[in-house]
Amino acid sequence: MTTVIDINRALGPLPHDDVPSRDETGLLGELDRLRIDTACVSHTYAVHGDPRDGNERLDLIADRRLRPVPVLVPGPLGTGPWDGAAPLVRLCPRLHGWSPTGPHARALLTALAAAGTAVLLAWDEVTAAEVHGLAATGPAPRTVLTGTGYRALRDLAELLETHPWLYVDTSTLCGHRQVEWIAGRYGAHRVLFGTGAPDTDDAGPRYLLDILDLPARDAALVAGGNALRLLGGEP
Image 1: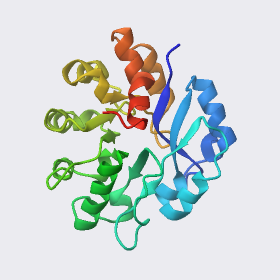
Image 2 (image 1 turned 90 degrees about the vertical axis):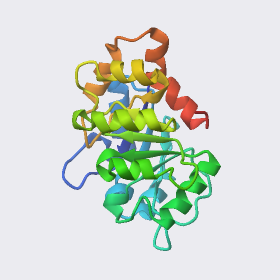
Image 3 (image 1 turned 120 degrees about the vertical axis):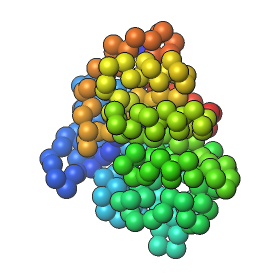
Image 4 (image 1 turned 30 degrees about the vertical axis):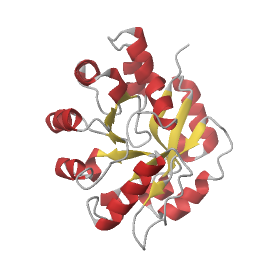
């Protein structure tokens, strides 16, 4: 039985919509409906509001199927020094108003890389040049680019060719055979199942997972094997 892990999901209410995943019970119901075994979740309060408040709410999660993903902000007005307590974190530089290539960000990225902590980074939060710059002055943490989509594919291809520490999620890779193309060119180990829900659709990426035209071993890596390796600190 293939393990399915959603690497990119949110828990909590949205400011613009009423969603089932506004609470833990509702989110678990959605996972059951879509046959998703585990979800890595950031709290919507941390993404759309104060990261410190939202991260504290992750401590209230009771079900082990939900893996907390704190949102970090560097600098003296941020979330504080990284203590390595989670294997995966989320960075939202544009939403929270900090430079991903500044000295405070560099210090945080260095700490994340040293701790073996992986990063979720949305495509609309950075530019391609900023992603290239993450490794300009030192080791970069393993980073999953989320929400890349059709218009980002040329930049994404260049980034994946240049930086072996970069990965991509499936949340918006909904074009014809996009996942297969990336897996074939850069390796299935670089692609992780993620929905981006509830901000984006979850049923589409989940259906895509069932019809991937990949060898069974590669499809299993995309579904959950790669996420398990990433959460375990492996490249």
